[in-house]
Length: 274
Image 1 (cartoon, rainbow, N blue to C red):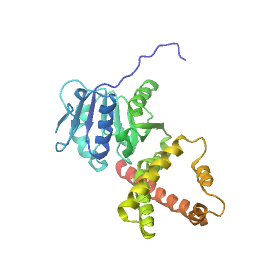
Image 2: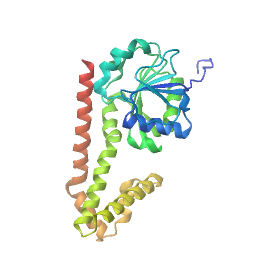
Image 3: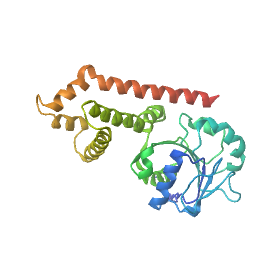
Image 4: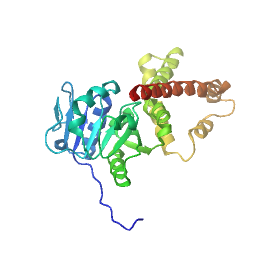
């Protein structure tokens, strides 16, 4: 405590530069949850998209006073183009949040002058309030961190992470839904191989993963313990687990998968430094 009462930081007015699949999912959940009012959001897009009613969209950032927060949600490859067009207009914005994969804070700071810069890595389930948002900033003060956390909490689990681990978090949580979707497809295909109709196998696999994930989230033990509880000695589940566990086959596969994604994040970060 330093003896001073510090004012609360709030986020009311937001500009989004880009609003594709991920940005759109975030925006829809913010509006649906009441965290943001549609009339307080402006979106800059190359072309009009279907957005929540009341949200304004245009090809350029608005005139007038700067908002509380600018969110960069375009493709990482468009960073220099966007900076060239809008950096001067955005100069002095209190906070800039970037969801650009692989673009580090200092690379953003070299292009934009903001009160603080925050990196964010959401994953797609943010659109239903069940996602993960990883955050990192060396320039945000505690009041801003609290305000950003409050906004992001409407999207799901919020974690502030060590910048040195951001690529790993991006690979695990940011890319993770795609890996899980592949697993669901593979589980269904395995059922088809045992003679199930494809549509039925797909329904069974999806419901199995959904229910199992909800149960694991509510459990007071790790998922691995749940797996062992399901598996009776010498039973059918145990025989299946023996295949996954032999030589740590599943662990090795996912380690390689996440490592490949993390390595690509590092490559993109290096490209953004140039």
